[in-house]
Picture 1 (spheres, rainbow, N blue to C red):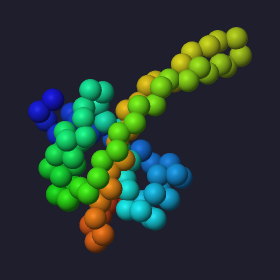
Picture 2: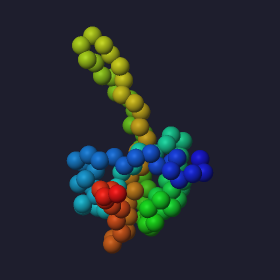
Picture 3: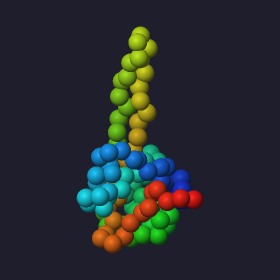
Length: 96
């Protein structure tokens, strides 16, 4: 995966990730399966033009869900939590 846009799929915006953005300057992204911390660091630095301090990666396994008699699973997701140094920021909500 040489293209940075193929590695970073989308930012994950939840209440928990918003608290992490405010308190610790950490931003959570969904990343492609099979990527490592170095690839994620290089992709974030290339796309957003910021310096990355730390990268943590976790795999979220699918969960069983049921609606009535029908059962299924949620999709498996690979997340990367990226810590930025003080003074740097990624604006995820800017107008286009």
